[in-house]
Amino acid sequence: MEPGDSTKQARAAAQLRKGVLEYCVLALMRDRPRYGVELLQALEDSGALATSQGTVYPLLSRLRRDDLVTTTWQESASGPPRRYYALTDSGRAALDEFTRVWPGFRDAVDTFLSTPPPSTGDHA
Amino acid sequence: MEPGDSTKQARAAAQLRKGVLEYCVLALMRDRPRYGVELLQALEDSGALATSQGTVYPLLSRLRRDDLVTTTWQESASGPPRRYYALTDSGRAALDEFTRVWPGFRDAVDTFLSTPPPSTGDHA
DNA sequence: ACCAGGTTCCATGCGATGCAAGATACCTGG
DNA sequence: CCAGGTATCTTGCATCGCATGGAACCTGGT
Image (cartoon, rainbow over all chains, first blue to last red; front, side, top):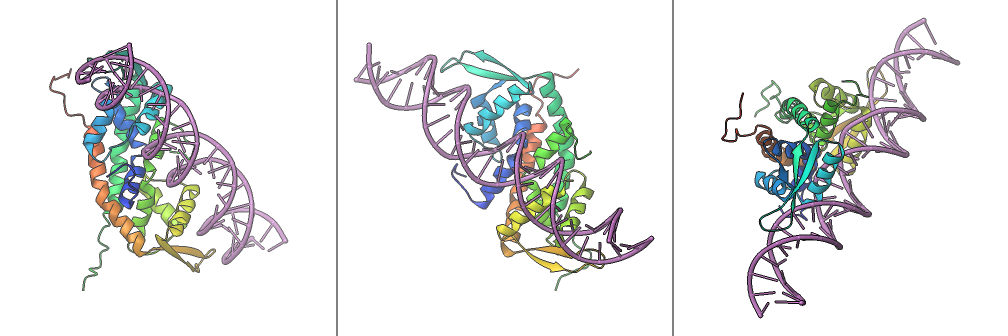
């Protein structure tokens, strides 16, 4: 799935990420602070949610603007300093909120996709 | 969950619908043609994907523009005529494509939300 | 000292999408 | 003729993912 890919599958996946990426990033920060490239790699490893810097950094800016995360600079053993992002109380609340909403949403989509075989055996 | 609701839950749900609504609408047309208000009611009944006319009609226009559906006018027993939307071959292909992509996406989100207990038992 | 390469951060502009609000038309019933 | 319900569609806005490009820091080779 190259970056410049514009197949139907890529388009569908791109639209799917909308709104979900934000909460998956928050989820990644649940146990410990993370920095940008680290988040990017974790999303990449997940496969379905792989994205680019041009998506993650504006997202992180919004999270900071909305007080869902706080950031602290920290030196790196090899390379430029890293900005670590950590959940605030609001951020944790938003993540909990999403965790409550997600199953209902997920199941609703599953229901729409798995059409209940319409009673009448319409086979040959 | 009123339309003008702007709680965190409503905001999260609104962003979730992005990109998914299109394919749920296509899924609803899989077995038989449907008309606008009928689709609207089906989404309403699902709970998590409830939306408004201002969302559905522009969406249906895009589907028609992209040749994913065809439409036919049909008289109603009581009320104005209805425009019925039916899947084209392209529409059915797009739905199949999404059906293939969805499980991977869904499981990826589930994995992010259900943090694998990070070794150290940090419970109470 | 200098420069190439890797790492890390960020800003800008575009396209696509959901939504609120409003407009139009048809049919029935008083 | 008018009120109300049904059904369709348009417009303008806000948000989000993404491609592109740029800037800063560190290491290592020459």
